Image 1 (cartoon, one colour):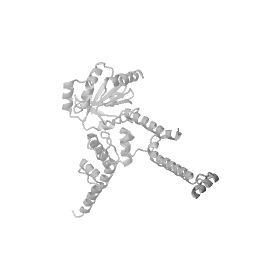
Image 2 (tube, rainbow over the protein chains, first blue to last red):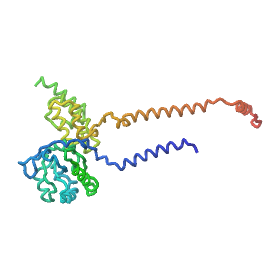
Image 3 (cartoon, each protein chain N blue to C red):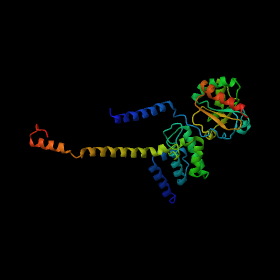
Length: 177
Length: 161
């Protein structure tokens, strides 16, 4: 048999392999350049006590999660029971970033479905969201004791993501000094 | 009023030539008065990708994030930042993915050089195939073949040389 005839077949094989790998990738997940960088600073009023402010500097020295949510966000409803269950473990403080939401609607949403957050802060016009590179709510960030972003989860957090990635990472970061 | 009229026409002409993008951008901030800043904003917005609807620029997209990012571009132009500073601001937050024209880096080398490489490779293959064919067509006849051809032409085909 002519060996030259195998060349198109080999090319097809390479293309096929690339396309198969491509099918398993999620184009919606844009890798964040902020991983390994200091978390962008903010000082925002809290949702439930508008006279009180919470700043990123207040959270230094502990591992914490930032969960971006909104009452208008449909996927947040999917994620919510998972977070409620996770919050019970008291493993790590969860800060909610109420993104581009009306504060009274955010408060009503938490009252109706439950509040998994230790505290929620208000990002009314989405500026802090842009600083954190938020583009698809919900998003969850893991921040270490030094205030460096270690992990970003885009889209609703599910039990598998919590158990396989987020919880082990949080424990590891908590052990580190 | 008469002094302002030509400028006004210039802005309109610019908006018309830039087409849809300019119209959308103008919607974002209708109070934009400075034609130079406007042109810069439109150009920058046409180079930044909307992360929500990924095949649109932030100039084309009406997603909330695109509106917010357009506002950022305009605010930063108003604050006197350079185009490069604004692009840096965006890539620091969203990565190179926000750029419609990815920068030339080690990992994007194949992306940029790929089409040129394919053209060169295709051209080389084509040249080789053409030359091979020509070589076959113009191969000189051997003495035996020539004699046989002559015999055939003479008509005594059965008498082999």
